[in-house]
Image 1 (cartoon, helix red, strand yellow):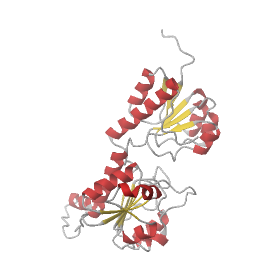
Image 2: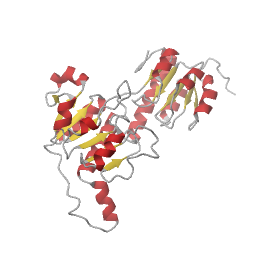
Image 3: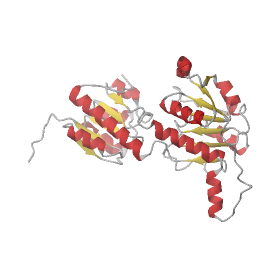
Image 4: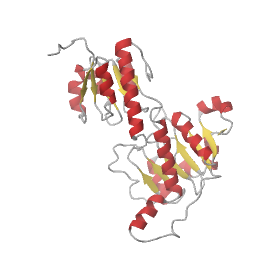
Amino acid sequence: MKKLDLNMPKILIADSMDSIAENLLKEGNIDVDVNIGLTPDQLIKIIKEYDGLIVRSATKVTKEIIEAGLNLKVIGRAGAGVDNIDLVAASNNKIIVMNTPGGNTNATAEHTLALLFSLIRNIPYANYGTHKGLWEKKKFKGNELKGKTLGIIGFGNVGRRFAEMCFSLGLNVIIYSKYFNSIKNEFLNYESVNLDFLVKKSDIISFHCKANDNGNPIITMQNITNMKKNCLIINTARGNLIDENDLKKALQQNLIKGAALDVFIKEPATENQLFGLNNIILTPHIAASTSEAQIIVAEMIGKQFCNYFNKNEVSNAVNL
């Protein structure tokens, strides 16, 4: 029987992810438990046993969980967004939080493009009617993307990739982003604009940014009333970037043509006021959910944890 190394770091993988993360940790002489679907109380009860915790988006790593992790040194997010981790509590307890930026960039950008095509060509509704044998050719006349103006809010990895895709399809790309404004000379095909200009001039608005520090939405009814009547809104970034109450009113009153959301204020979104509207497409936070992306982010976080515990190297830390 193999003798247990009491000094071996112990890691908990609390969300479903590709097994490459577990395998890499074991190869790095790190003890690993995979325990999926724990309730907050269950996680609080056992987290003191672990030196590290790896999650995706399902597990909410709250202040209570962090403070119960008496031996926690690092929390890893297999993905880019860390909205489900209390960064302040982690910093206060001197726990490093790492993410894996870029691992799901292409997957998320492609899903955003898929939603855009679905909106502008009425694909979900045409599919539903055809399955019913309705053959509603005249009802589902769509529009073309070429020549339209795309307004991108945010210019991180996904925003950059989505801009690249859409420019190649013949769209005019304008961007609202402080970061982009500082590097706009490197991207002469895109125009840097303020939010008011973007709202008024865009045929399509797509979010690729972080939430406001105060939690308030970026787009409210005040912005929506300045949009084109044929404007399409897409959000695959974070919930609450657009006020859901105002979005519902805008869609009901035909102030804009349509919307597509992959993210919501409250998740899982088993109930939502946007359900049942006939000019919105909703998907259950799956933009990053491709086989390829999940392998990449699981491999990235596995390697980052191995480097941290074996070489004392920190990469992609988002706090401290």
